[in-house]
Length: 206
Picture 1 (spheres, rainbow, N blue to C red):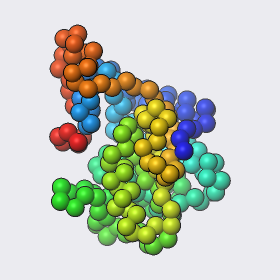
Picture 2: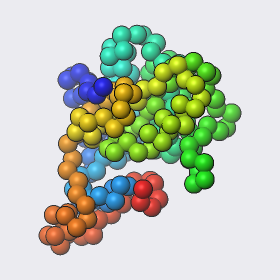
Picture 3: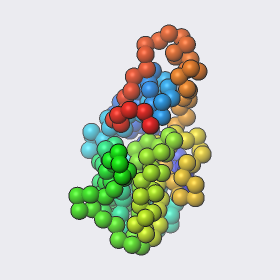
Picture 4: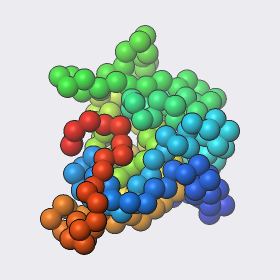
């Protein structure tokens, strides 16, 4: 399930623009594909007021979509990029906000004393969803903890309306269509522009 109310979506897009989170250039995405635009939500989250407004809007949309004032018991974000968002979404929904960490050998895990009780309703928070690979990996890890339910919420949905999470509910504040290409098909490369740069925080290609 994707999408958000028009007013909230417009507010979210305005906040991204005001914070300089919508970047133009030649970018190498974590998937290995190239794009001419990039959403760097870290620039939004450095402003606590804008971050709060964005997550409040997304939280209201989630409540309305689910039809419950307290639809979840805990929010989990994948580190590093969604640590702040998990806290802000937890605050917006009035529940715990925690994060999961990845290592090369075991994938995502809850550490630092964090835990999920069997039966708890879990919302996974991610700033931008494109292919959804990291979130799917986290959902698999959380499923082993016997949650009551799982859902995903993102500030920005770049999937083009095709949720990568199967039957898992997916809520988003802003939907953006940003074309991307394989390196050999990238028009920016073919035009001879500056080499693609990797703006994200995740090392290597995944």
